[in-house]
Length: 174
Image 1: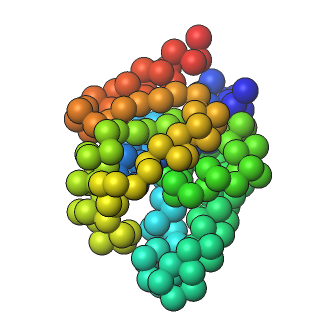
Image 2: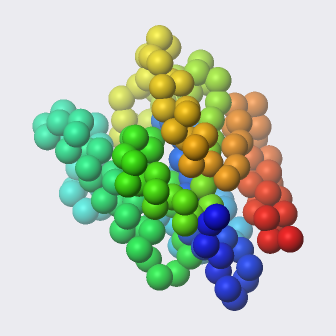
């Protein structure tokens, strides 16, 4: 059961998880603005702390080093005393310690059709583009295990995705 903010009745930290291209950063930013909370974005936090983007870290230090940084960034955000909205890197869901920590947060799994994810991820400069043939469903059981809410952002506008999450959070207060 996720922790709640005793002053508002809203969930404590809200963590957005999902594959690359699912809309985590966009949704987290909109949700943070809507709730008047700070937003933590894994990719931005890593770039701010290292001066490098994820793609570069993976290339020079290895994918495992990047994944360790991504988990560290999430734990830093979850340790913030003020409830925040966190856009977590997709890789963090593979770590059982992270999944355990997510039990104390309200976890939103955002997803979309693989073709939409591949097209969206090709637009970002901080990550590699997804190949259409990649097994995007490999992490799905882990996302499902952690999720308090699932939103398919594939055919939804940014505003509609945000509305669905806000409505679900409001309903969880009742």
